[in-house]
Amino acid sequence: MEFQQFVDIADKWCYNTPFELIATEEAESRLDFYADPGVSFYVLCPDSDFRDNFHVWSESEDCLPFLQLVQEYILSCGKKTLSEVLEKVFKSFKPLLGLPDVDDDAFEDYNADVEEEEPEADSQHMSVSQQ
Image (tube, rainbow, N blue to C red; front, side, top):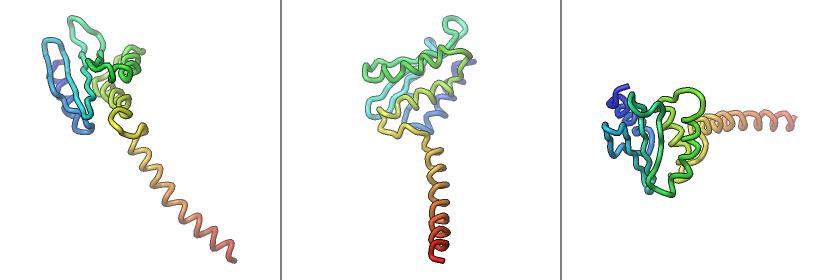
C-alpha cells in the first residue's frame, strides 16, 4: 500500500476521534497523532523494505502501558489494517482521554430499548394490579 493511502485512512479516522494527525514521515512510514490532554502516539506502517506489520509506540511514558495490548493485538495471528489498529489504539486510550470505556453507540442503543420497554411494562402491570 502506498504511504499516501495510509495518510488518507488516518485523516479519515481522526474525524471520528479526538486525535489529530500532527505529522507524517514518508521515509519512515510514520504517522504521528496527538489528542488533549497530552496523549500522543505514532504508528509505523508496513513497507516493502523493513516491516511486515504495523508498530505502535509513544514517546510519552504515560501512554506506553496503554499501547502494550495494541502491540500484542498487532502481533497476533493475521494481518491487521490501519483502521483496525487505530480503533484498538482509540479504545485503549479512552481512560486517558476521559471517555467511557464502553462502545457509546451500543450503550445508547441498549438504553433506548430499555427506556422504551420499561414504561410500557410498568403501565400494563399497574393496570392489571388495579383490576
